[in-house]
Image (cartoon, helix red, strand yellow):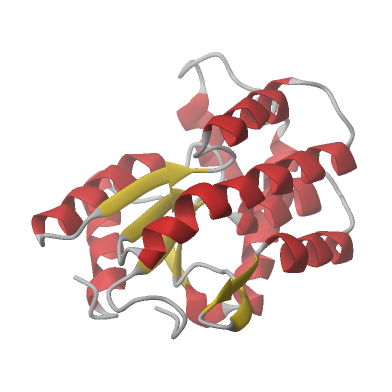
Length: 218
């Protein structure tokens, strides 16, 4: 929780390559917070607002170069922050977001090979927030990273559904994405909880709960 948001407000992002299982546990964590009487905003990226959801469809399905893709993702993020995330935090809610900026660095940066410095510039511009006369770059209070080898993730995704253009990428793409997540964690280790996603569903869930209870949030 940053000093620029109300007491009790939390912003937690869930990250991981496709097939890592993060979406399974974000709902469980929402229920755990609600059981404590907390108000939870459950959202996702790209998406989370009517405009951002339209951009999501294009990003996941249309052919475009890496810069166009990154710009659309950050455009969706800006609207998401302004219309959903910041108002929820201002109300003192818990915001659980399926992917945030770490995914952009992992997928568009490491996966697509787009310039990381330009992504950092966009991050500074788009996530610049003013609250209580203080300017800061909005980041999650905690990022729960479901770390799973791309080989195992690929096995899990086989036949699961019709893949979008990212899910249909070859194995070496996801190996680069996984390295991108690792680099983001190494740059901000205090913000990350690294979860071994190659575990039983219950084992993963217990690790997620531990990462929250260790911070006194559950």
